[in-house]
Length: 583
Ligand SMILES: [Zn+2]
Ligand SMILES: [Zn+2]
Image (tube, rainbow, N blue to C red; front, side, top):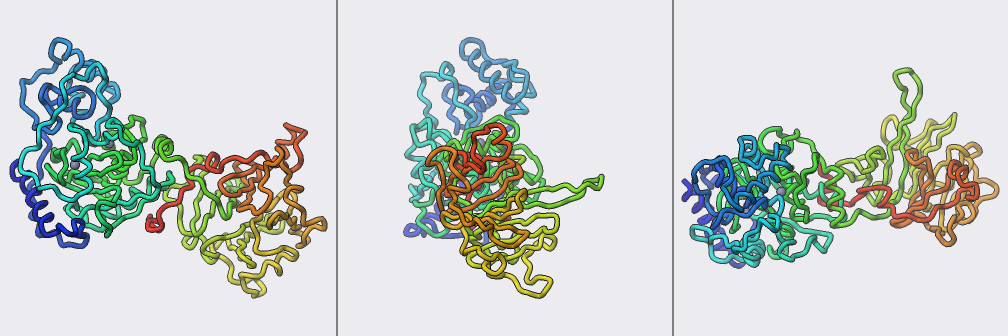
């Protein structure tokens, strides 16, 4: 059975490679795969004795392995013992066991007990957890034996090329130790599920959907975008993904069958999934979620090591947690240390206020913050200080009846008598019906929307840069170039003193630290109890009444010095347009 499982994919690889020398990356996405006769699943050999445990500790970076044992060699059978051997080697092994036990929340006895064996047999990623400590590294060179069985002749595959170039004994995700780069230098990365690497368990479309979603989850929190490349030359694809069983895809690692190792990945390289595992789509509660494993392995490709923090997707073991999951705070911060955080301008920003009654019948105001850029919008969760999972979404789908892109401004006129929301673009404005969640097409008198700004807001120029409503003064501030127009919503006219220079209405607190003209957005934040002005990737906070009580010297509406938007509003990240409409 072992021989069959070694030869079968090899023959398949040869067959695939032979007729396609000229176009090595021919596509098989819609191919009927029923001609591939299913073969029985292999089961991973359970780790049950000291030698196997030693091999585990060596394979995953906890200790140096037993003499002559490369990580790709079959597991030898040895006498069953539960204590490490005597001597310095035994001491090093006990120490490795203790460290493994500690991070797995087990008593750090240094002895191979049943609980430790159970932890070693849990489903896990094939990337080593850690490097062996220096004192435990033997002076003997690590030379894994050549893989058994015939191998296909050199194929024009970038991933194989990369692996062959790697130093002998190179472990997955090892580029940093090999002196390679820590992170990709470019910001748009291409990926492909390779033609010979489709899983037999999910439909081809389902597999690609899961991978698109997994890449999108990382691009939601980094400046990276990911593009599926179906047709370009294989050598140009940054990240290749594939499923395989046993010896697979020309890889120096061998998959162990059902259980234990389910996938492995190379930093800045490729990802392989053990197709003997029961991978399931995100909608399933059973098996191993391909989405979770893919997100984890992509984390390795992007440069992240394993983490033992609760909640992190980079934990080495598979943790079933229901179908929904997201990248937690530690994952976001870890990847942003490598790639930076997302910076960018907004077209419009506003707090959307809903008035609700609490159980005692008192009216309370709830708010959500929305950020608009081009044709996308994000909901910002002020409580968690991050964008909502799954954002951005197209404006078209969330805000019916308003322009689908490049909205100039939003104001919410809110007085004792009025509760009205308006969007502005070009020389027109739209009124939005909060109850029906769509733009009005006409008012009570039958006059249609959208309308000209010059008619609804006399004296206000268009197109506008931005606007915000000051509820205390019952004024709308409209911004155009270097001018500010204060509009009295009760009299429906511009204040007699308007327009004024922006530097006069909102003076700089620190000399020459001012946007001067052409703002992108402005809004009153209920979370911060302050007005913010945005331009490019920076913001200015307007001094509030409380600020002036604390610092009486501050000018009214003074602008505090500029700050990067990305340091106050986290993870407002663009995604590739091909993944914009995914849920
Ligand atoms: Zn991993
Ligand atoms: Zn592999």
